[in-house]
Image 1 (cartoon, rainbow, N blue to C red):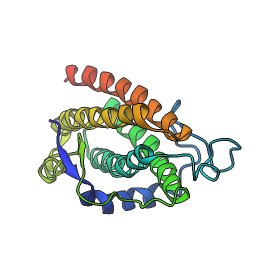
Image 2: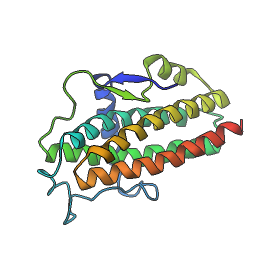
Image 3: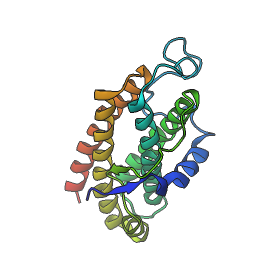
Image 4: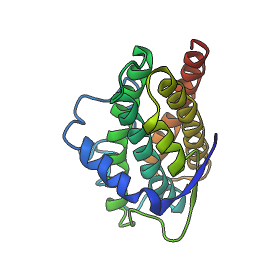
Amino acid sequence: MKKTLTMTSFAFAAGIALAGCSAGTGGNNMPGMNHGSTPSSSSGSVVGAAGEHNAADSSFAQMMIPHHAQAIQMSDLVLAKKDIPAPVTALAGRIKAAQGPEIEKMTGWLKAWNEPAEMSGDHTMSGMMGDEDMKELSAAQGPEAARLFLTQMIAHHQGAVVMAQKESADGKNADALKLGSGIVSEQEAEIKEMKELLRSF
């Protein structure tokens, strides 16, 4: 199920996700997902981190933003459907609530670092769904949609874990490293949860 997709294909989706979550970030983080510091923090904050990053930090944010945006898009699709098992809708809601604020966080970092929101050239991201995958999820209904969402999101999370592990190995910025570590732990836990849910169908 692992797919790769170029960065430019999801720039628009990232914009939609960022706009959609900007009004509701105050209390929507799931427990353990408030990674990194807020702009008012005294150490390692967005405001104070402009010179404390390297190319790996920039690439991590530039690639993870559209990756998160697609996860939110996938979650929105399943949340809009009827007859989806409650544990699946709960998971989709948690994914959306956690990753929306993280998009805003990473967007703020790139602005503070004077880095572009998108990487130049074509870059592939592990775990991204292609157009046909998204159309298939959009068309599916009921338990079949739930199964497809879980299968696709497992691959999507696995791709995010790979990207976050690379940040942990190569990054420099303390906030980005903290977010990368959090993504690994939280999404590996969700992968386990999703595999268990699939066995229940």
